[in-house]
Structures are given as C-alpha cells and as structure tokens.
Image (cartoon, rainbow, N blue to C red; front, side, top):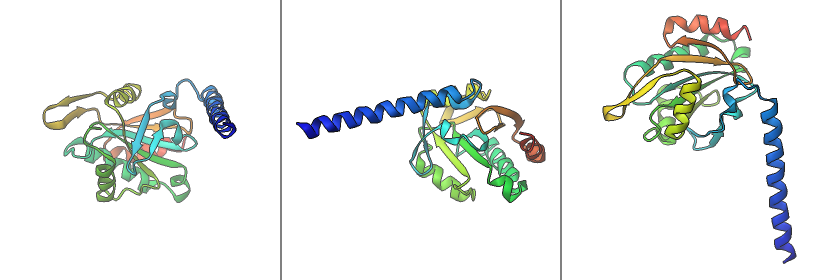
Length: 190
C-alpha cells in the first residue's frame, strides 16, 4: 500500500511539474507564434512532436504531400536551394519543416522514404503528419489555402514561410527556385 501511494504521489508530482513547465513556456511564447498551436504531430521517424519543439532555431516551413507531381517538388527544391545557399554556420541555426497535406497516406514510413529519395538530411529536416484538423489549423495560421480533390490529390498554395526562433512568421515567399536567394537574404535579417 505504501509503494502504491508513493507511485501515485510520484505521478502526481510529475504531472504538476509538467503543467508548471507548460504554463511558464506558454507565458514566454509570443502570442503571434505558430508554436502557440498545441497540436501533436508525428515525424518521419514516428516520434511525437509539438510545434514548440522547433523553437530556438529559425525554421523554413511549407505544406506539401509526398505523392504530388506538380507544385510540391518545386517547393521542396526551393527549400533545398535555400539550404545549399546557407553557410555552415547559418545551416546550424536553420531547420526545415515539411508538413503533409495528406496525413492519411503520408505515414512516417512514407515520409522517411520521401526524405531519402529527395536526399533530405533528417538532422536538419523534419517531415510532419498530423490530424486533418491540425493540418487545417496550421494551414490557416500560415495562410496556406488547400482543397482536397479526387484521388487523394490536393490543390494548394505554394508558400514557403520563414519563422524566427520563437515561431513568428518573418517572411513568406512563393515556393519557386528564383526566390531562394531572397529567402536566404531574409533569413539573415532576424
């Protein structure tokens, strides 16, 4: 009985500490940060992630789907061009996030294979999948419009967003290769 009570008290203490840390964290996070979204995501390795786990580093983020044959390859190529134009020091301070618009088919395994095919270094790239509602919420915050159409295809905006270390949107550009230099310049201003 004593061990049971100790276990319960230990769990209650852990929950209280977690809630306290969350409360402190949310108080220090700017109100205009996308990290205020409390959605839970799964990355290409099957790890559960909160958007706030990306804080502390600038991020370049966009929404795509892995079987897209049109806009998404251009978005990914543009983000890769941005990465290649960064110095080693800058690369250490910038991450890249791709969020799936088709979470029902973009499983961690599919996203991991996509990362391998596109030669995305998952030390610096995160591919995320969430619920349809969480994807819609993030898309609204990033002002990315999308509509599901037949055969698991999606019509969508091709915006790339640059976030500061606290998850505030600092720039948005069309995901086109000729915007890679402009994105690198903008990343250097914050």
